[in-house]
Image (cartoon, rainbow, N blue to C red; front, side, top):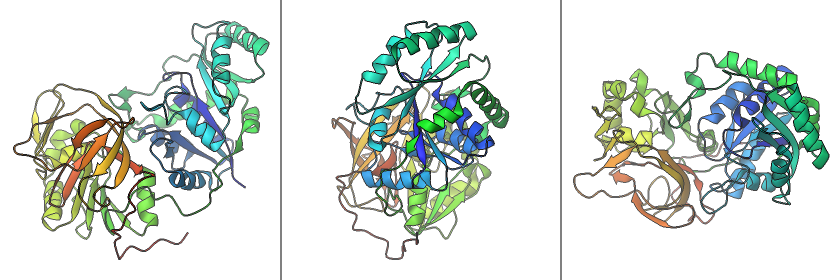
Length: 456
Protein backbone atom coordinates (compact mmCIF):
# COMPACT_ATOMS: atom_id res chain seq x y z
CA UNK A 1 0.00 0.00 0.00
CA UNK A 2 1.27 3.46 -0.88
CA UNK A 3 2.38 5.86 1.83
CA UNK A 4 -0.11 8.67 2.50
CA UNK A 5 0.73 12.23 1.55
CA UNK A 6 -0.27 15.88 1.79
CA UNK A 7 0.67 18.91 -0.29
CA UNK A 8 1.66 22.23 1.30
CA UNK A 9 0.50 25.23 -0.77
CA UNK A 10 -0.15 28.94 -0.31
CA UNK A 11 -2.01 31.82 -1.93
CA UNK A 12 1.28 33.41 -3.04
CA UNK A 13 5.04 33.15 -2.88
CA UNK A 14 6.53 34.45 0.34
CA UNK A 15 3.79 33.01 2.56
CA UNK A 16 6.25 30.79 4.44
CA UNK A 17 5.51 27.39 2.90
CA UNK A 18 9.19 26.44 2.51
CA UNK A 19 10.01 27.19 6.15
CA UNK A 20 6.89 25.36 7.27
CA UNK A 21 7.65 22.33 5.08
CA UNK A 22 11.20 22.11 6.43
CA UNK A 23 9.91 22.34 9.99
CA UNK A 24 7.36 19.62 9.32
CA UNK A 25 9.93 17.30 7.77
CA UNK A 26 12.40 17.73 10.61
CA UNK A 27 9.74 17.56 13.36
CA UNK A 28 8.29 14.33 11.97
CA UNK A 29 11.76 12.84 11.53
CA UNK A 30 12.61 13.70 15.13
CA UNK A 31 9.37 11.97 16.17
CA UNK A 32 10.55 8.77 14.49
CA UNK A 33 8.40 9.07 11.34
CA UNK A 34 10.09 8.05 8.08
CA UNK A 35 9.08 10.93 5.83
CA UNK A 36 9.65 11.52 2.12
CA UNK A 37 9.20 14.76 0.23
CA UNK A 38 8.89 16.40 -3.15
CA UNK A 39 8.94 19.91 -4.57
CA UNK A 40 6.51 21.02 -7.26
CA UNK A 41 8.01 22.59 -10.37
CA UNK A 42 11.53 23.38 -11.56
CA UNK A 43 13.62 24.11 -8.47
CA UNK A 44 17.15 22.95 -7.67
CA UNK A 45 17.58 24.67 -4.32
CA UNK A 46 14.54 23.96 -2.13
CA UNK A 47 14.96 20.18 -2.58
CA UNK A 48 18.43 20.40 -1.02
CA UNK A 49 16.80 21.78 2.13
CA UNK A 50 14.14 19.06 2.06
CA UNK A 51 16.87 16.42 1.87
CA UNK A 52 18.71 17.96 4.81
CA UNK A 53 15.53 18.13 6.90
CA UNK A 54 14.19 14.66 6.09
CA UNK A 55 17.44 12.77 5.55
CA UNK A 56 16.24 11.52 2.13
CA UNK A 57 16.63 12.62 -1.47
CA UNK A 58 13.91 15.04 -2.54
CA UNK A 59 12.60 14.83 -6.13
CA UNK A 60 10.82 17.45 -8.21
CA UNK A 61 7.38 16.69 -9.64
CA UNK A 62 6.46 18.91 -12.58
CA UNK A 63 3.00 18.57 -14.14
CA UNK A 64 3.99 20.80 -17.10
CA UNK A 65 7.41 19.45 -18.00
CA UNK A 66 7.14 15.75 -17.09
CA UNK A 67 5.48 12.84 -18.89
CA UNK A 68 2.92 10.80 -16.99
CA UNK A 69 5.28 7.82 -16.80
CA UNK A 70 8.00 10.03 -15.32
CA UNK A 71 5.62 11.39 -12.69
CA UNK A 72 4.43 7.87 -11.87
CA UNK A 73 7.95 6.49 -11.54
CA UNK A 74 9.08 9.36 -9.34
CA UNK A 75 5.97 9.06 -7.20
CA UNK A 76 6.84 5.43 -6.53
CA UNK A 77 10.42 6.38 -5.64
CA UNK A 78 9.31 9.16 -3.27
CA UNK A 79 6.86 6.90 -1.41
CA UNK A 80 9.23 3.95 -1.12
CA UNK A 81 10.08 2.92 2.47
CA UNK A 82 8.41 5.96 4.08
CA UNK A 83 5.37 6.41 6.32
CA UNK A 84 4.32 9.86 5.08
CA UNK A 85 5.01 12.07 2.04
CA UNK A 86 5.08 15.88 2.34
CA UNK A 87 5.01 17.89 -0.88
CA UNK A 88 5.77 21.59 -1.20
CA UNK A 89 4.02 23.63 -3.88
CA UNK A 90 5.40 26.38 -6.07
CA UNK A 91 4.29 30.04 -6.09
CA UNK A 92 0.55 30.38 -5.41
CA UNK A 93 -1.70 27.30 -5.47
CA UNK A 94 -3.14 28.06 -8.91
CA UNK A 95 -0.07 29.69 -10.50
CA UNK A 96 1.54 27.80 -13.38
CA UNK A 97 3.27 28.29 -16.70
CA UNK A 98 2.26 30.94 -19.23
CA UNK A 99 -0.20 28.49 -20.76
CA UNK A 100 -1.89 28.04 -17.35
CA UNK A 101 -0.68 24.47 -16.82
CA UNK A 102 1.75 22.99 -14.31
CA UNK A 103 0.40 24.59 -11.15
CA UNK A 104 0.48 23.09 -7.68
CA UNK A 105 -3.27 22.61 -8.06
CA UNK A 106 -2.71 20.56 -11.23
CA UNK A 107 -0.30 18.29 -9.36
CA UNK A 108 -2.72 17.97 -6.42
CA UNK A 109 -5.53 17.03 -8.81
CA UNK A 110 -3.40 14.50 -10.69
CA UNK A 111 -2.24 12.72 -7.52
CA UNK A 112 -5.51 13.31 -5.61
CA UNK A 113 -3.55 14.88 -2.76
CA UNK A 114 -5.19 16.95 -0.01
CA UNK A 115 -3.88 20.52 0.07
CA UNK A 116 -2.89 22.24 3.31
CA UNK A 117 -3.13 25.98 2.65
CA UNK A 118 -0.55 28.19 4.40
CA UNK A 119 -1.91 31.72 4.81
CA UNK A 120 0.31 34.65 5.76
CA UNK A 121 -2.01 36.20 8.33
CA UNK A 122 0.17 39.21 9.16
CA UNK A 123 -2.07 42.27 9.16
CA UNK A 124 -5.23 40.20 8.57
CA UNK A 125 -8.38 39.85 10.66
CA UNK A 126 -11.78 38.47 9.69
CA UNK A 127 -10.88 38.91 6.01
CA UNK A 128 -8.85 35.71 6.30
CA UNK A 129 -12.11 33.78 5.87
CA UNK A 130 -12.84 35.39 2.50
CA UNK A 131 -9.34 34.57 1.27
CA UNK A 132 -9.54 30.97 2.45
CA UNK A 133 -13.04 30.45 1.08
CA UNK A 134 -12.01 31.71 -2.34
CA UNK A 135 -9.16 29.21 -2.56
CA UNK A 136 -11.32 26.37 -1.23
CA UNK A 137 -14.05 26.94 -3.82
CA UNK A 138 -11.90 27.87 -6.83
CA UNK A 139 -11.53 24.36 -8.30
CA UNK A 140 -13.88 21.55 -7.35
CA UNK A 141 -11.37 18.76 -7.97
CA UNK A 142 -8.71 20.38 -5.75
CA UNK A 143 -9.43 19.75 -2.08
CA UNK A 144 -8.12 22.24 0.45
CA UNK A 145 -8.37 19.93 3.45
CA UNK A 146 -6.79 22.09 6.15
CA UNK A 147 -5.50 25.57 6.93
CA UNK A 148 -2.29 26.73 8.58
CA UNK A 149 -1.96 30.35 9.65
CA UNK A 150 1.51 31.88 9.58
CA UNK A 151 3.05 35.01 11.12
CA UNK A 152 0.29 35.34 13.71
CA UNK A 153 0.96 38.31 16.01
CA UNK A 154 -0.45 37.09 19.35
CA UNK A 155 -2.85 34.63 21.02
CA UNK A 156 -5.60 37.27 20.67
CA UNK A 157 -4.86 37.55 16.95
CA UNK A 158 -4.97 33.73 16.64
CA UNK A 159 -8.36 33.59 18.38
CA UNK A 160 -9.78 36.25 16.05
CA UNK A 161 -8.56 34.39 12.97
CA UNK A 162 -9.83 31.01 14.15
CA UNK A 163 -13.25 32.43 14.99
CA UNK A 164 -13.59 34.02 11.55
CA UNK A 165 -12.66 30.75 9.83
CA UNK A 166 -14.77 28.51 12.07
CA UNK A 167 -17.85 30.68 11.42
CA UNK A 168 -17.57 30.17 7.64
CA UNK A 169 -15.67 26.98 6.87
CA UNK A 170 -15.54 23.30 7.80
CA UNK A 171 -11.83 22.95 7.08
CA UNK A 172 -9.80 22.66 10.31
CA UNK A 173 -7.16 25.17 11.35
CA UNK A 174 -4.20 22.91 12.04
CA UNK A 175 -2.20 25.58 13.80
CA UNK A 176 -1.12 29.19 14.12
CA UNK A 177 2.60 29.85 13.75
CA UNK A 178 3.82 33.01 15.47
CA UNK A 179 5.99 35.59 13.80
CA UNK A 180 9.61 34.77 14.73
CA UNK A 181 12.10 37.54 13.82
CA UNK A 182 15.36 36.21 12.43
CA UNK A 183 14.00 32.79 11.45
CA UNK A 184 14.70 33.14 7.73
CA UNK A 185 16.97 31.43 5.24
CA UNK A 186 19.44 33.63 3.33
CA UNK A 187 18.82 34.17 -0.39
CA UNK A 188 20.65 35.32 -3.51
CA UNK A 189 19.71 36.05 -7.12
CA UNK A 190 18.46 32.55 -8.05
CA UNK A 191 16.64 31.84 -4.77
CA UNK A 192 17.79 30.53 -1.41
CA UNK A 193 21.47 30.00 -0.77
CA UNK A 194 21.92 26.22 -1.31
CA UNK A 195 21.76 24.09 1.80
CA UNK A 196 25.31 22.79 1.38
CA UNK A 197 26.67 26.33 1.76
CA UNK A 198 25.00 27.09 5.12
CA UNK A 199 27.12 26.18 8.13
CA UNK A 200 24.24 27.03 10.50
CA UNK A 201 21.60 24.98 8.69
CA UNK A 202 21.12 22.30 11.36
CA UNK A 203 20.28 24.77 14.16
CA UNK A 204 17.83 26.55 11.85
CA UNK A 205 16.11 23.28 10.97
CA UNK A 206 15.91 22.23 14.61
CA UNK A 207 14.51 25.61 15.67
CA UNK A 208 11.92 25.48 12.90
CA UNK A 209 10.98 21.91 13.84
CA UNK A 210 10.47 22.91 17.47
CA UNK A 211 8.22 25.79 16.37
CA UNK A 212 6.12 23.51 14.17
CA UNK A 213 5.86 20.77 16.79
CA UNK A 214 4.67 23.30 19.37
CA UNK A 215 2.08 25.10 17.28
CA UNK A 216 0.74 22.53 14.78
CA UNK A 217 -1.50 19.52 15.40
CA UNK A 218 0.73 16.95 13.70
CA UNK A 219 -1.54 14.00 14.51
CA UNK A 220 -4.50 15.67 12.83
CA UNK A 221 -2.33 16.62 9.88
CA UNK A 222 -1.35 12.98 9.40
CA UNK A 223 -5.00 11.90 9.54
CA UNK A 224 -5.76 14.18 6.59
CA UNK A 225 -3.16 12.46 4.38
CA UNK A 226 -4.28 10.21 1.52
CA UNK A 227 -2.44 7.42 -0.40
CA UNK A 228 0.25 8.96 -2.60
CA UNK A 229 1.07 7.79 -6.10
CA UNK A 230 -0.59 7.25 -9.47
CA UNK A 231 -0.94 3.48 -9.19
CA UNK A 232 0.97 2.97 -12.44
CA UNK A 233 3.65 0.64 -11.18
CA UNK A 234 6.34 0.17 -13.80
CA UNK A 235 10.01 0.86 -14.51
CA UNK A 236 11.95 3.57 -12.73
CA UNK A 237 11.67 7.05 -14.16
CA UNK A 238 14.15 7.79 -16.97
CA UNK A 239 13.57 11.41 -18.01
CA UNK A 240 16.58 11.73 -20.36
CA UNK A 241 18.70 9.30 -22.33
CA UNK A 242 22.15 8.70 -20.81
CA UNK A 243 24.89 10.77 -22.39
CA UNK A 244 27.20 7.74 -22.30
CA UNK A 245 28.11 4.57 -20.45
CA UNK A 246 30.37 6.42 -17.98
CA UNK A 247 29.32 10.01 -17.35
CA UNK A 248 31.62 12.39 -15.48
CA UNK A 249 29.36 14.86 -13.64
CA UNK A 250 30.66 18.15 -12.22
CA UNK A 251 29.45 18.30 -8.62
CA UNK A 252 30.26 21.21 -6.30
CA UNK A 253 29.06 24.70 -5.33
CA UNK A 254 29.69 26.03 -8.84
CA UNK A 255 27.78 23.21 -10.57
CA UNK A 256 25.11 22.09 -8.11
CA UNK A 257 21.99 22.18 -10.28
CA UNK A 258 21.56 18.58 -11.42
CA UNK A 259 18.15 16.98 -10.98
CA UNK A 260 18.39 13.78 -8.87
CA UNK A 261 15.75 12.22 -11.15
CA UNK A 262 17.95 12.67 -14.22
CA UNK A 263 21.01 11.14 -12.54
CA UNK A 264 18.95 8.29 -11.07
CA UNK A 265 17.42 7.67 -14.49
CA UNK A 266 20.85 7.41 -16.08
CA UNK A 267 21.92 4.91 -13.41
CA UNK A 268 18.78 2.81 -13.88
CA UNK A 269 19.54 2.69 -17.63
CA UNK A 270 22.93 1.17 -16.84
CA UNK A 271 25.18 4.24 -16.90
CA UNK A 272 27.85 4.91 -14.29
CA UNK A 273 28.02 8.39 -12.71
CA UNK A 274 31.54 9.67 -11.92
CA UNK A 275 31.40 12.88 -9.83
CA UNK A 276 34.26 15.38 -9.90
CA UNK A 277 34.80 18.87 -8.50
CA UNK A 278 35.99 21.69 -10.80
CA UNK A 279 36.46 23.97 -7.76
CA UNK A 280 38.90 21.42 -6.34
CA UNK A 281 40.66 21.51 -9.75
CA UNK A 282 39.68 17.92 -10.48
CA UNK A 283 39.51 16.89 -14.16
CA UNK A 284 36.72 14.64 -15.43
CA UNK A 285 37.58 10.96 -15.12
CA UNK A 286 39.68 9.96 -18.13
CA UNK A 287 37.68 6.74 -18.61
CA UNK A 288 34.39 8.66 -18.98
CA UNK A 289 32.83 8.72 -22.44
CA UNK A 290 30.71 11.79 -21.62
CA UNK A 291 31.04 14.86 -19.41
CA UNK A 292 28.08 16.75 -17.92
CA UNK A 293 28.41 20.25 -16.48
CA UNK A 294 25.14 21.15 -14.74
CA UNK A 295 24.01 24.67 -13.92
CA UNK A 296 24.99 26.43 -10.75
CA UNK A 297 26.93 29.54 -9.80
CA UNK A 298 30.10 29.73 -11.93
CA UNK A 299 29.78 33.53 -11.81
CA UNK A 300 30.44 33.45 -8.05
CA UNK A 301 33.53 31.26 -8.51
CA UNK A 302 34.83 32.54 -11.86
CA UNK A 303 38.39 33.44 -10.69
CA UNK A 304 38.85 30.01 -9.12
CA UNK A 305 37.48 28.21 -12.18
CA UNK A 306 39.69 30.27 -14.50
CA UNK A 307 42.72 29.20 -12.45
CA UNK A 308 41.70 25.52 -12.33
CA UNK A 309 44.19 24.30 -14.92
CA UNK A 310 43.68 20.57 -14.43
CA UNK A 311 39.91 20.92 -14.72
CA UNK A 312 40.06 23.04 -17.89
CA UNK A 313 42.73 20.86 -19.47
CA UNK A 314 40.70 17.77 -18.65
CA UNK A 315 37.63 19.22 -20.36
CA UNK A 316 39.65 20.07 -23.46
CA UNK A 317 41.22 16.61 -23.51
CA UNK A 318 37.81 14.95 -23.27
CA UNK A 319 36.51 17.00 -26.20
CA UNK A 320 39.65 16.32 -28.25
CA UNK A 321 39.24 12.59 -27.63
CA UNK A 322 35.69 12.66 -29.01
CA UNK A 323 33.88 12.43 -25.66
CA UNK A 324 30.51 14.18 -25.55
CA UNK A 325 30.80 17.30 -23.38
CA UNK A 326 27.46 18.88 -22.47
CA UNK A 327 26.75 21.96 -20.35
CA UNK A 328 23.53 23.50 -19.02
CA UNK A 329 23.25 27.16 -18.00
CA UNK A 330 26.26 27.62 -15.68
CA UNK A 331 27.90 24.63 -17.36
CA UNK A 332 27.26 26.23 -20.75
CA UNK A 333 29.00 29.40 -19.55
CA UNK A 334 32.01 27.38 -18.40
CA UNK A 335 32.34 25.81 -21.86
CA UNK A 336 32.62 29.24 -23.47
CA UNK A 337 35.62 31.45 -24.04
CA UNK A 338 35.04 33.85 -21.19
CA UNK A 339 32.71 34.89 -18.37
CA UNK A 340 32.35 38.56 -17.39
CA UNK A 341 31.33 39.02 -13.76
CA UNK A 342 29.12 41.76 -12.30
CA UNK A 343 32.15 43.96 -11.71
CA UNK A 344 32.97 43.82 -15.42
CA UNK A 345 36.03 41.61 -15.04
CA UNK A 346 36.53 38.91 -17.68
CA UNK A 347 37.59 35.40 -16.67
CA UNK A 348 38.82 32.85 -19.22
CA UNK A 349 36.81 29.62 -19.39
CA UNK A 350 37.37 26.36 -21.29
CA UNK A 351 37.10 27.86 -24.79
CA UNK A 352 35.32 24.81 -26.21
CA UNK A 353 32.42 26.86 -27.58
CA UNK A 354 32.85 30.24 -29.32
CA UNK A 355 30.62 32.12 -26.86
CA UNK A 356 31.13 34.55 -24.01
CA UNK A 357 28.65 35.43 -21.27
CA UNK A 358 28.29 38.49 -19.10
CA UNK A 359 26.70 39.53 -15.80
CA UNK A 360 27.76 43.16 -16.19
CA UNK A 361 24.16 44.16 -16.91
CA UNK A 362 22.06 41.40 -15.29
CA UNK A 363 18.86 40.61 -17.17
CA UNK A 364 16.43 38.00 -15.94
CA UNK A 365 15.54 35.14 -18.31
CA UNK A 366 12.82 32.91 -16.86
CA UNK A 367 10.30 30.40 -18.12
CA UNK A 368 9.45 26.93 -19.32
CA UNK A 369 10.82 25.92 -22.71
CA UNK A 370 9.70 23.48 -25.43
CA UNK A 371 12.88 22.34 -27.17
CA UNK A 372 13.53 20.57 -30.46
CA UNK A 373 16.95 19.05 -31.14
CA UNK A 374 18.59 20.45 -34.27
CA UNK A 375 20.97 17.52 -34.78
CA UNK A 376 21.14 13.89 -33.69
CA UNK A 377 23.33 13.14 -30.67
CA UNK A 378 23.27 11.52 -27.24
CA UNK A 379 20.18 13.56 -26.26
CA UNK A 380 18.18 12.04 -29.12
CA UNK A 381 17.48 12.23 -32.84
CA UNK A 382 17.20 15.46 -34.80
CA UNK A 383 13.66 16.66 -34.27
CA UNK A 384 13.31 15.01 -30.87
CA UNK A 385 11.24 17.07 -28.48
CA UNK A 386 12.22 17.85 -24.88
CA UNK A 387 10.98 20.11 -22.13
CA UNK A 388 13.02 22.29 -19.84
CA UNK A 389 13.30 25.50 -17.91
CA UNK A 390 15.41 28.64 -18.12
CA UNK A 391 16.33 30.89 -15.18
CA UNK A 392 19.45 33.05 -15.25
CA UNK A 393 20.68 36.64 -15.35
CA UNK A 394 23.50 36.23 -17.85
CA UNK A 395 23.69 37.74 -21.33
CA UNK A 396 25.21 35.80 -24.20
CA UNK A 397 27.52 38.09 -26.17
CA UNK A 398 27.58 37.96 -29.98
CA UNK A 399 29.97 35.31 -31.26
CA UNK A 400 32.48 35.63 -34.09
CA UNK A 401 30.91 33.75 -36.97
CA UNK A 402 27.64 31.85 -37.13
CA UNK A 403 26.99 29.28 -34.41
CA UNK A 404 25.26 25.97 -35.01
CA UNK A 405 22.38 25.96 -32.47
CA UNK A 406 21.60 23.02 -30.22
CA UNK A 407 17.83 23.57 -30.05
CA UNK A 408 14.95 25.41 -31.61
CA UNK A 409 12.90 26.69 -28.69
CA UNK A 410 9.37 27.79 -27.87
CA UNK A 411 7.88 29.20 -24.71
CA UNK A 412 5.26 27.36 -22.65
CA UNK A 413 2.46 28.52 -24.96
CA UNK A 414 4.25 27.28 -28.06
CA UNK A 415 5.37 30.69 -29.32
CA UNK A 416 8.67 30.49 -31.25
CA UNK A 417 11.71 31.94 -29.49
CA UNK A 418 14.24 31.01 -32.18
CA UNK A 419 17.41 28.91 -31.95
CA UNK A 420 19.29 28.57 -28.70
CA UNK A 421 22.49 27.03 -27.41
CA UNK A 422 25.51 25.98 -29.43
CA UNK A 423 27.23 22.84 -30.64
CA UNK A 424 30.69 22.38 -32.05
CA UNK A 425 31.94 18.87 -32.74
CA UNK A 426 31.30 16.77 -29.63
CA UNK A 427 30.67 19.82 -27.39
CA UNK A 428 27.20 21.25 -26.85
CA UNK A 429 25.18 23.27 -24.38
CA UNK A 430 22.52 25.88 -23.77
CA UNK A 431 21.00 28.00 -21.00
CA UNK A 432 18.08 25.54 -20.72
CA UNK A 433 17.88 22.98 -17.93
CA UNK A 434 16.42 19.80 -19.41
CA UNK A 435 13.72 18.15 -17.31
CA UNK A 436 12.19 15.41 -19.45
CA UNK A 437 11.46 14.20 -22.93
CA UNK A 438 8.12 15.45 -24.22
CA UNK A 439 5.07 13.23 -24.30
CA UNK A 440 5.12 13.72 -28.07
CA UNK A 441 8.88 13.18 -28.31
CA UNK A 442 10.35 11.22 -31.19
CA UNK A 443 11.16 7.73 -29.81
CA UNK A 444 14.87 7.42 -29.18
CA UNK A 445 16.54 5.07 -31.66
CA UNK A 446 20.13 5.80 -30.78
CA UNK A 447 20.71 3.43 -27.85
CA UNK A 448 24.16 2.85 -26.52
CA UNK A 449 24.62 -0.87 -27.27
CA UNK A 450 26.65 -1.36 -24.10
CA UNK A 451 24.02 0.09 -21.76
CA UNK A 452 22.37 -2.57 -19.64
CA UNK A 453 19.21 -1.84 -17.62
CA UNK A 454 19.76 -2.16 -13.90
CA UNK A 455 17.49 -4.82 -12.33
CA UNK A 456 14.75 -3.37 -10.12
